[in-house]
Image (cartoon, rainbow, N blue to C red):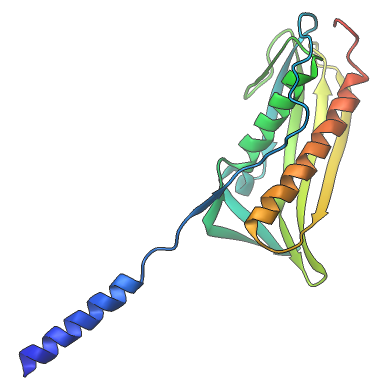
Length: 197
């Protein structure tokens, strides 16, 4: 009888352990869409895109702000890359299509003879408040001449209301906000870059 009880207990433990599987990890990416036509890049200078970010934006896990004092990091839902990397790549790709510069690349520091676009990423997250949830992108930018002179500076702040608190909706909203922000920066930069610079 004791052997029978022991096997029942072992069977129950195995059933419980089998039901406690690790939750599935979901991975999300951005899609900025827009015009993918490559403009003429035969003339002009080069551009280096350099990004900085707060520490929590240098890892791929999705962040949700629940108050001005608290952030929650999702352990099983993450971005395909860190927000810093995704923002850097989005700026590089969009500026490469713009025709403003001959070559656009990213680097951890400026390069001699190149214009530099410095991006300081402050927020890239979902904000959950009693009034509702929103997606928020906040960054500061500085555009420098090859000689290091500041030609343009500004802040991009985008808040997009979310229809629901799901991460798919968040990815769509952040994509839209970032795309709009990049267009604003590109327009500001275009005013300072002479044709055929």
